[in-house]
Amino acid sequence: MNTIEQLWYVVYTKPKHEKTVEKNLSEQSFETFLPLIKKHKKWSDRKKWVTFPLFKSYVFVHSISSKIQEVLATKGIVKLVKFNKSPAIIKENEINNIKIMLNGNYDLQNTDYFQKGNKAQVIEGPLKGLKGEVYRIENNDRLLIRVDAIQHSISIQIERSYLKLL
Image 1 (cartoon, rainbow, N blue to C red):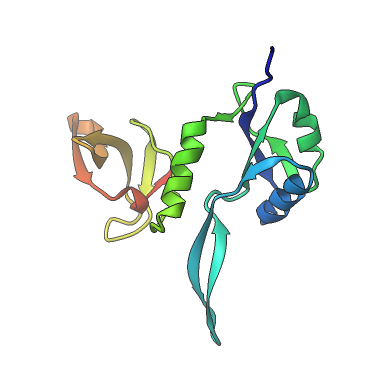
Image 2: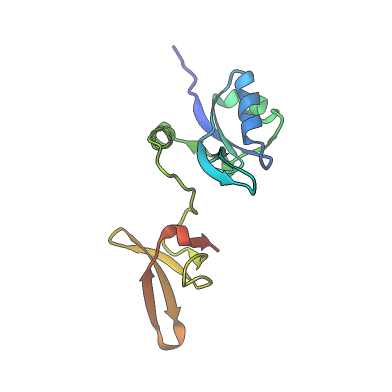
């Protein structure tokens, strides 16, 4: 018996269309995953808990490859996310990890994906505006500032949430 494997694909949606896309795909019998987080929103006249997508403009779709064109025809979807011309596939354990974190009612925040050597800028705190290079020492994020003229560099430990990828 030859089974066709279902994979978790990633679709990119129009801005603020994640919930609509998720609903439309579900109505077409596609299994979807839209990680949502709750935030306490404050207006001038009231406060309210509101749900927001953890990843703006992304919805995960569990499907077989032959149904992707049907997925992409769904209203609100801009494109299939690809890397090196191949569809981005999310591993089952990554989906499960996100679900575990969401079900644990943790305060989740989406942060930029940094890799060693990425250029970054500090966006919060007393070092706001500082630019440098990201690296890690003993599981701590550090921002490296190079002083090329004297061939030295300095680094400072910094919260990842204070950084923005350049």
